[in-house]
Length: 392
Ligand code: TGC
Ligand code: FAD
Image (cartoon, rainbow, N blue to C red; front, top):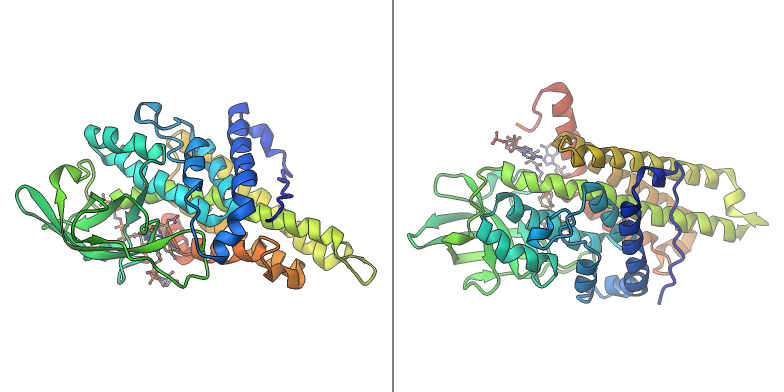
């Protein structure tokens, strides 16, 4: 069982920018990760298992829909609190953060933002409590970066909709109770549907053989003439802006989350560099190691400042999708580079499960692809600053 010696690093005294409530929320999440996640996460990844016992703990620390108001069972926190929780979870493992991101931003958020009052009352309290788990189906086998081309569709059959198609790469699909599914109606308009496990014709085969996010279950969603009750259509959004609106929230959480993974890698590398002796002195005394560590803490600090400011803007409802893309892209890349450098500092030990580095590094290879790839976010920034659309 791994010991967790993690110590957070706050080079620019960022804590002074946080309220007492923020710090309490963050420290609660941090303590829970130390107690419940670190001791078993390595084995969970080695055996490709999502530990279901984490679900109740996540609900208790407010990680499911942190910003969903209390009237719908959520904790009613602000956006910075959401970010801090994601940071602490991803310090534990990106797969753990994925589970919370999906439940919060991709399942609870669309029901909250686009759902009917009945849908909100029926689903949100159970999702906040972890009594119901959800997943989000946008990506298809032939439509990843370009979800607008999706083929999944439904037809109006009078008293129900008939849904056909398939989604792939869906986090939590193998065990989710409900799926938020994005599909085209007969006029070609993208709409959101709530599909429940057990509906005849709906299956969720698991995806095996991943070298990344091994503690997170990934699968498909297959719809073969699935009858969806009419009351399960999300009434208040039409078009691609529906799913993309959810992604704004999830990408924001990822921008914070990956700072946690980066901090864990840096912290481990810093400690190792002081303990590991080569050529008669600690490797941290060599300039080349110091360059790596100095650059890591610089990049972490810049990412912390970026996300804090983004959190302030998001609290004021002023964060633009392009600003969120910039933070997601920058911070995931930052974390991945730090994981790679930290791996080098650990030498051969860096490839073992005795340290969290390789696990973070492999996880981040997914994080840099999902929720919009590194290059897609670059093109979003490019379009924002030039006004020219390079997608089409
Ligand atoms: P485009 O013509 O630009 O836009 C269509 C409509 O959407 C609006 N819009 C947005 N609305 C809200 N938020 C955003 N971020 C938005 N971006 C665009 C836009 O204003 C327009 O509205 P309207 O009213 O005019 O109809 O669309 P496009 O087809 O050119 O695509 C743009 C592009 C490439 C940026 C978009 O498709 C994209 O972001 N692609 C990446 C796909 C992606 O991120 N997939 C993620 C799948 S979910 C996932 O990965 C979960 S991982 C979960 C985990 O485990 O954590
Ligand atoms: P593609 O779109 O085929 O891209 C392949 C390459 O081409 C990329 O490098 C991309 O940047 C590049 N490319 C594409 N278009 C352009 C362009 N116009 N210009 C330049 N380069 C371009 N999806 C969900 O809906 N729900 C989930 O819960 C979910 N969870 C996931 C979990 C995991 C572990 C993974 C790996 C993925 C998950 N996804 C999920 C899917 C994810 O969002 C997609 O993988 C991602 O959007 C990229 O799509 P793709 O894999 O089809 O790659």
